[in-house]
Image 1 (tube, rainbow, N blue to C red):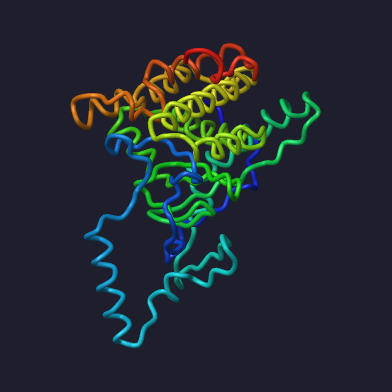
Image 2: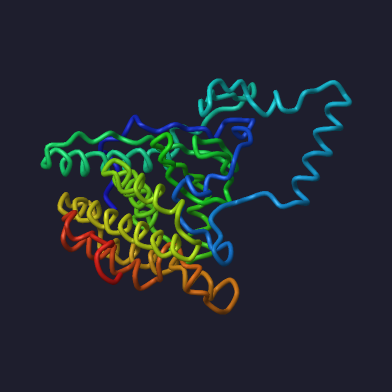
Length: 310
């Protein structure tokens, strides 16, 4: 992917130097939570919740610090004000790697999504509100709650931000066999696709509707939402191709990534069998097809995953 030397977005918030990890909060993948990129953590897994043993351990640690006269909750809170505000807190001598190549790549990919969707929205007589990309290490907070590296990349409708622990890309390569810069760009473009859905009113309607759905029904609808985000990512890919940014093999990198993180492939890898009623992102075939549909057409109309079979 020919990305170097292109415009970089200013809408990136680098929290990788935050010593506190952002504090604790509710799980971002409840009924009104964020929309994540799957990490292969088992059937129906949506995020990185805390186990009972971990909670007990944290309570014991809290009581020990309390007995020593240290209010651990104030330390973890890191000076947060408001319901979902964030104030960066860094230890002395700790620097944020704002100038590393990964940051430059992420800024460039985000800028390209901005250009793509600005143009599409403008053609429809609409304004495109640019999202913020939050880079974090291990853990952070969002308007959707606490998130850890186990959560995987996700979009939070509550603050219009995409959250990404860049270590995920190492896992994408080593665990899923999906390497390449365009595969990484696909991950970002997919989450930005959720932001586009939010601006178009699709996510609010889905979040409202799934309050009344059973888990099985919500999973089926979630698959349609996720596949549309894949299709929107494909539209972005089409625009990058038209700009001459793609190298030979880039499209195959994205399609391979889509294949490797299909629900059926993840479940076969982790447990040896699949449970279709637990799918919430789509099968490998579905994810590849819808990304390719967006890539081939470059049109929003081609990404209607809510009419007919997927």
